[in-house]
Image (tube, rainbow, N blue to C red; front, side, top):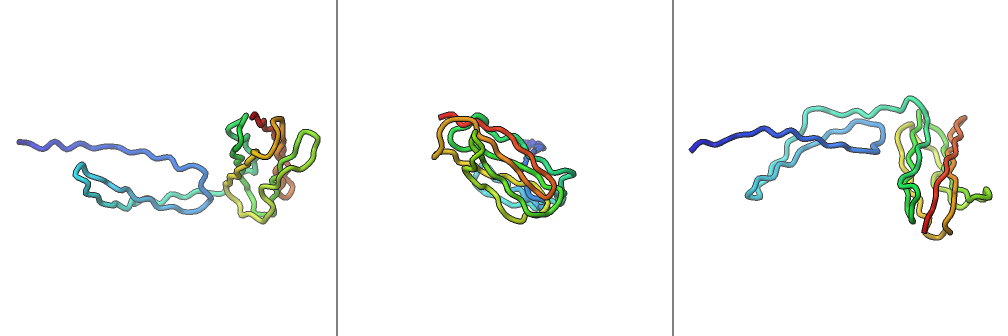
Length: 136
């Protein structure tokens, strides 16, 4: 009896990582439950973004939780705030010094009424506002 060996290719996408160096390892589990770890030889380097940007939240519309991603090209003091339709601040999500890199904030609107809200990112000389919609 002849054993047939096959090669499998694997792909994995790791999202929303902070800037830095990462190493990965693979855990192979055989059909009989035995397993072995393999350190992967390549180091993955996530660099600093070329520009500061505020992304559109997702999901949108949302109920009651949404994700707000942003990236910073320079380190500095950052604020990320949510406002209602009349301009009143309803929540501060970020209010601190942040290193340059990629970030995600989670906004929970469970205590708010359905409607249109705005979120604003301020970082040094950068200001950007986007609209989000809470539907209950």
